[in-house]
Amino acid sequence: RAEFKEEMLRKRYEEEVGSLAAERAKVETEEHQKLMAFNNLENERLRKIREERLQQEAEEEQEQKLEAAIHREKKREEFLKEKELEVLQLQEAVKNFITLENLDERIEEALDNPKNYNFAIDKEGRFMRRTVKQSADRNPPGTAMPSPPE
Image (cartoon, rainbow, N blue to C red):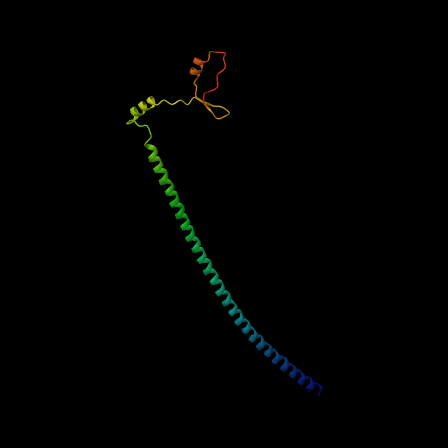
């Protein structure tokens, strides 16, 4: 009788544990399925966010490239304008250059209009345009120079 009771209890225990194990496995499988579905949804949501961010970054990069190209073009145009202005100024300056064709004319002009760069400026800002030869003619050695006429 005791063996029979023990056998019955063992069978009942195995059925309960066995059925509970099967139920537990079934519940775990269902929970796993739900978690996998949630994970897939979350991955899909994050993929969309990532794609939108990448698209936005690509658009911003494209805009930056366009702005950089526009900026480079403006710099190039400014550079060309500066160089054109420089060329025009040089062409204007060439008119005053001394060349073989106008050498005689320039020599005559320089002889007709002598320039004297030998002058001094006193503390009051007046120009003193006397040369050493003129001063020596007017003032014998040992005498002071008179103040310049205004």
